[in-house]
Length: 137
Image (cartoon, rainbow, N blue to C red):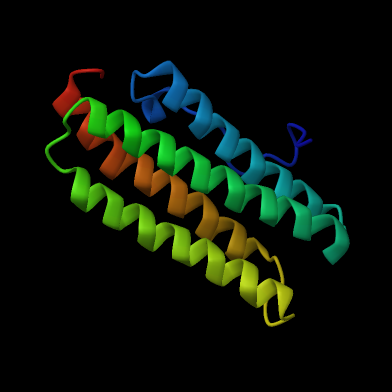
């Protein structure tokens, strides 16, 4: 578990989309990124980092599916575009995992900043757009 000294990605109130279930899932994704950062900074080996990456992928897939189902139920007008963004983001995480598994990538501070930006930008741009349209924020 990440400690205060190893947190690279703190939750901020402006990330909230005003939907408790989605906010909790976003916080779960942030926790996994922080856990990955903690493992990296503690010098943990591949055997400790690989399961966190796998968990991040599974959580990302389940979160995106839940978010898309909620948006479909609420008739979000830009659902198709949001799904395309999700596919692109998921593919980026798959690529990161595949490179890590093939030993073509080490988990570095640059990778951590990529993951942080990947999620923060998605929440602040795409997720906040649906929050505005749905009136939850």
